[in-house]
Image (cartoon, rainbow, N blue to C red; front, side):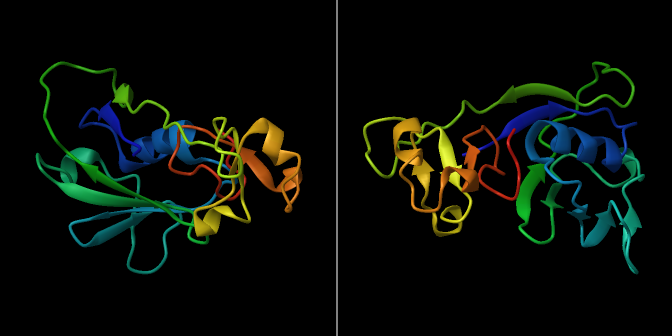
Length: 163
């Protein structure tokens, strides 16, 4: 449902990729994050047995490498990442570039079904419910203060993420 294609120079570090993912898709409250690559864990705030996200990409990723990313270890958003190509063209040193991303998914209001959802209730979202249009959010039993805007992110409706 949510995807991005990125260009990331091999001179970049995992921390650069972490910062980009946070800035574009995830950051809400400064939560910790981690990558898992070939059985090794690289964390933003290391614990015993974990490696630093200051690790350069060239030392841990190759063409075809599938790896994982977690943001927020309480209400975790998990991403699956994969190196799909290597480019010879240069990118600015350590700059992650967004090449393409999904269109924002269109979700209908789950209460009336007549309008697109613009808000999601954080209380109801854990059950896959709570997608509401502007009209229905005012009547929602949890109250509009429990709602967050519908945004183009896998973190929609989670914690305090508002895009």
